[in-house]
Length: 133
Image (tube, rainbow, N blue to C red; front, side, top):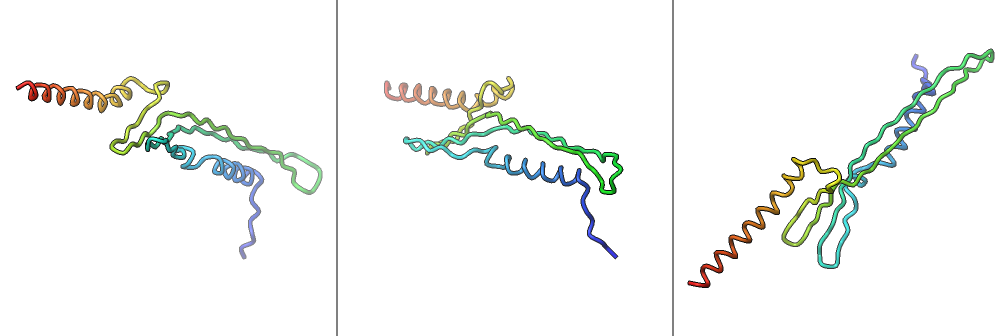
């Protein structure tokens, strides 16, 4: 016969700790709420989240028939903004914050802007050449 199993107090402590972490961290914490600007640009913050938790306990020796348990749990969360997604009518750009930008990432992020500038320069040069002839 299957009797209902009473969870050990450590299990209950861990369950409550994890539930609390779930309430604090969700997808909206990583990708923030969009911020609409007057010129039609939308800015979406992107964050990095690190968290950890610990839980533990011990059955205490006692002369009383009822079991004694001591335990606790805790968690820590760090939310670090790392970038902004900037959406305009004609373009979407990821602006990475330089504090967290490793050199290879910074170079890769700069390539689209560099290509745009070179293309714009070449277009202007070609227009100037065509207008002088």
